[in-house]
Image (tube, rainbow, N blue to C red; front, top):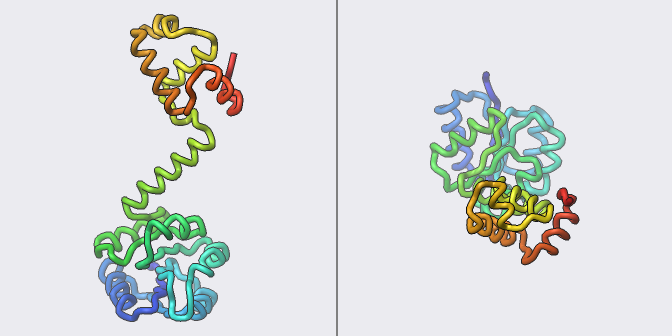
Length: 213
């Protein structure tokens, strides 16, 4: 499939490097270039490309101001943000606005090629460090929404027995474990849930509608 590309960057040398890469790695012959936000909006309106490779700072201002609208009005167009701006500050933000990927200009040619290929295939792309950080953020958000998601299957089983009124020895007998092992599971689940006693656990379970006998 012959993909079309629009390169939006205020530096000619960057656009030239990307054009050469697209030609060498993707045999792309349909590549347009713009340097300003106004040119960007006009170019997309005139002819929507398969992919927009976008720097966040263009000659006449920040493209970030237009990113969400661009993504909403052109949902089939892939947008790869390619910038010197901090990944820590901007990666999650641009993805939330609708971009398909975020890549630093410090990335190697191999990674740039990989990112473009991923995005063209409809897969989101961020560098591995950013991906790990976003995964941690997602886990933190899940934990805040429902702290019980942090528990292992064994910890949930121990907790359910505790909420049903069973003691450590009875739970150990039911599960075929040593009481010390059950006590360890109990300590871990208390620590993960931020509770110190059974009453606090019961209150937390009720607050999150976890089954309580």
